[in-house]
Image 1 (cartoon, rainbow, N blue to C red):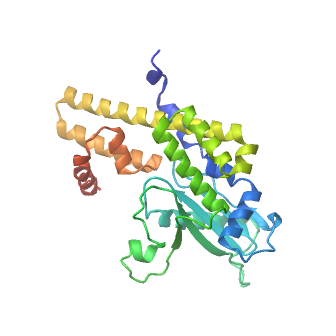
Image 2: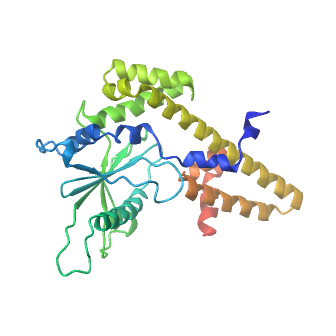
Length: 302
């Protein structure tokens, strides 16, 4: 049987599994501690015992997101990775993430917020790790005030520090280097096992995440190959949907209705799978010259 026909809508659940090298790496407190000290080099007395993980499980929507949350004493650190496509929406995700994290914190510690006693409020530090290839990105801070409210004052603001690189050799710079090596190998070998194995070989040779890859090489290979499978399922699903829309338009003779159905499906997929409009249009084989048209159509149909 054709491989493509083996996939159906239930298989899309696999794409929502929150698992990646990023989440695998930072599920270990040893590497969280290294991350914290990269962000706070002055914190020489902090140990793994001072770290409490508060990473949430896919609270926002279906799709794979590389999110990390942890507390160190009275600091709440939230770090989200932004891959491939730059997005300011990370600020809104941070806001929702913080609300859920603080709710869990007060619930788990049985803190009565209706009491007259002032409750403890861990100081939030918000970071976005940008590992995309757009070298023109130089924005150091993304904020609710500046990026969404046109600089106007409001009752709340959320400020996210953007990390493009870090001190050479620390865990942040190693992870960024890992992603760059990985992307280069995919360009050379395609989305194949060879690309994965070459990425791991080069990283170990160059001392990039060497300890992690040496101890969890099989896990890393499995994760990276699974991501290839997820992308195949995603692309197949979107292409099948486009085919169905075209057939529907031919059968019913209603080009406008079919176009509206396609727009609705594109919007739903973007929201539920957390992908950009550009990615959705790319896998649907829509010419890049039409991207602006679809972007405008989506705005008008809101």
